[in-house]
Image (cartoon, rainbow, N blue to C red; front, top):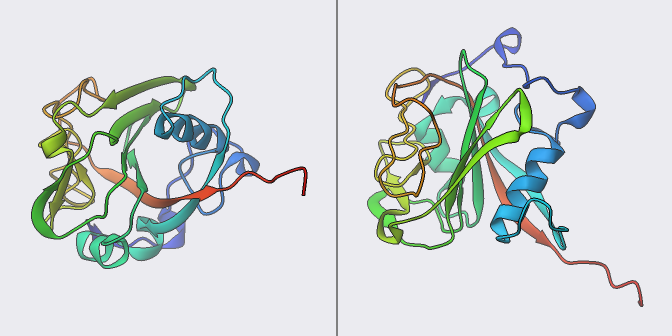
Length: 201
């Protein structure tokens, strides 16, 4: 993760109207947020979502630079984050949920609650959800990586090289290929729980 972009180089969202995007995101819409929120709560897509979550943008490559040092500076020690990655030259949106803090100490975060996923820009219902299988390797905390999940399941090295998805610690692969990809944009959101409003007050 090691480049900055001028305004004209910023990626365009996947077949979405400007009004559909969530605040600050160049990749995902409110529909994506709803799906991810349900997965956090272990709900089915058809279930009603109560309560809702606020997705607070912490890091974005187009603003902060696609740089692993900057990622760790901004996101380390932050709990409950969702990483969203747009793969350049494809219709893929990749991502993962980390309920733990990001670290730079070479450790693995241990949790049963993390998951990784992918969406296809051609349709919100064209997705893959993959939950953790080996909880001991759920989150990869490495100074030399950006946000990474599992042993090899979603590994972000830089903006231009070395990024890949190879199933190892999660139940399913989230890409149809093991080929490396270029990161067009990367966003990290902190998930904030919004308490439901009591209508009796």
